[in-house]
Image (cartoon, rainbow, N blue to C red):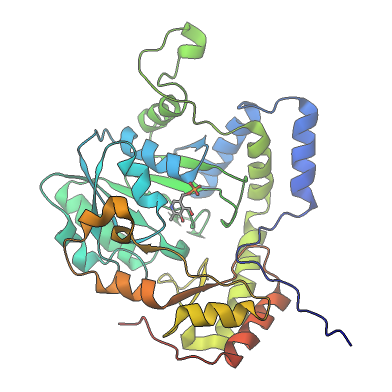
Length: 369
Ligand SMILES: Cc1ncc(COP(=O)(O)O)c(C=O)c1O
């Protein structure tokens, strides 16, 4: 007799209820599929959701980070400090425009830059610090890092890729830095397929970001004359239609995340990574002695966990950046396992993952201080 195979739980399944398809269908019917009024409407609503003066939708979160640095006036050769561990986008976004990255060690218990280690990475030439709201966390470390940057007169870029709409009135992800960014890639709380936005604090930042995303000149479509060099990095109305539907559902999206997280948290307790702000961690992470082994054990049960990210200096182009000891970043690389975490993750799937973790043959580790 054939035993029924368990269904596959993907690592990062998006949540796309019928309203998303309906929004895209309606947009197609308008025949306006390029950048236009849906994208402008999305920008206004996004700024409201993030409690910033303006938002400029662009083609990805990586592009949003590059533009944020340009808006702050950073020029090729300038130094920018990024977290030593994490997604490659956070370093590539700056290196690709000729900036010189330096690495700040993370705090093993938060996954965010460790404020106590930040000054190790800063020099007299540091022109910006990039703080990633790791797993969406906008905890006390963010205030500390913002304070250090303010005291040294160095602008802070807050990468709120995972923290869109997180927090409460007066404290929203993406609003803490001198400038902020978000991403709308598939695993994020709201997805447009690909996309991102720059979160600006005033009209000058907004206009500079619009120009950077549209051929270097905010007026060229009217004047037929381009005063600066730029590229086309805008978001289409087709994508913005999905974004507007996502904003309608933003609370529901966070509720789904929190329900799945709380099921895992209830079962796994201290074994599950906790975000420093006390809210649900956007990614579900455990620490084990042998991560490859655990990924394989889970895979055999249809659960697609993964090892994700590395210390930046593991990547050949950034090898020269290992100028200190990065024990916390190494710990994360050596021991973290990312369990399925997409907004599409159902409560039943979260239960199944929790049960599978209980059955694992492995030794758990702690990232706590
Ligand atoms: C923290 C962080 N910043 C930036 C990005 C880049 O976003 P995108 O994939 O939209 O370019 C990502 C993508 O996963 C991310 O996790």
